[in-house]
Amino acid sequence: MDEKVFKRFDGDRVTDDMLEEASKLFSENYPRIMGRVCLFIARFGISSYVRVSVNGRLAGNAFACRWAVDGMTICWVTQLVVHRDYRERGLASGLLNKIKLDGDDAYGLISSHPAACLAASKAFRSSINTVSLDFMKDHAESIMKASPEGYVRDAKLRGKLFDPKDDNGLVSSVDTEFDVDHEEPLEALAWVRESMEWPLGELFDGHEFILILQARRRSRPRSSSARRSGTT
Ligand SMILES: CC(C)(COP(=O)(O)OP(=O)(O)OC[C@H]1O[C@@H](n2cnc3c(N)ncnc32)[C@H](O)[C@@H]1OP(=O)(O)O)[C@@H](O)C(=O)NCCC(=O)NCCS
Image (cartoon, rainbow, N blue to C red):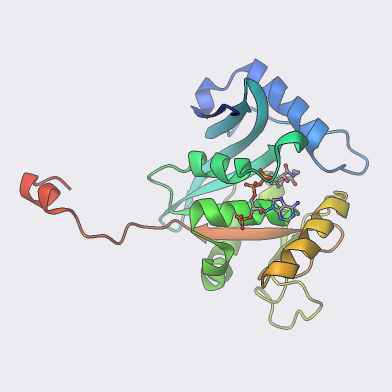
């Protein structure tokens, strides 16, 4: 049986060797970015780094940066990637589950890959069908404008969710002008749509999906032992 090990590191514990390995994983397993070799992974701004190894080999990772806006702490996921040999085994969902911190109020992700959106929905809510589009509509703009990450701040919201007059099939998208090869994400989208109602609409060239999710709060009342001991 495979041995899977998930680990989370705070930003200040991320080493140059980790960044180098992450950069290699990314450039070998991310869909081709036209005209660019690879995204530069900067140390600046990393709040958390999560990685999973399978039998000792790096199989996937993701970064998060965090910022505050509208009284909320936003955890923004970036550069989520799983090695091609280890996909569709729940590793992306597991990585995002590991990246969560107790103080997070909302999670965000820009991705062209439907599987990244499904993994985020599973880890941060329970499924994509429980995502509140209203929360996203109300908060997307202010969250993005407050981002320390230029590519998030400068992305333009597109789709019916943000502009009811938009009727070209986009629902929750951003125009990033980032020329990512969409062959793999479009195949995944067709496959996903065979089995479910996909809520985020079409995927156009130069665009990616945007997903912003409110953190799930425990609705269970405090246990009687916690009440007795006076803990909060
Ligand atoms: C997107 C990516 C990270 C998903 O990794 P993964 O480990 O295969 O994802 P998981 O196994 O956790 O699957 C998450 C969900 O997506 C579904 N899924 C995974 N791959 C899929 C595919 N190719 N087509 C359709 N659905 C897919 C899974 O069935 C699962 O759905 P469920 O929660 O309803 O069961 C991986 O495909 C990847 O690295 N792609 C290239 C990089 C990329 O596009 N990253 C996103 C940028 S932020």
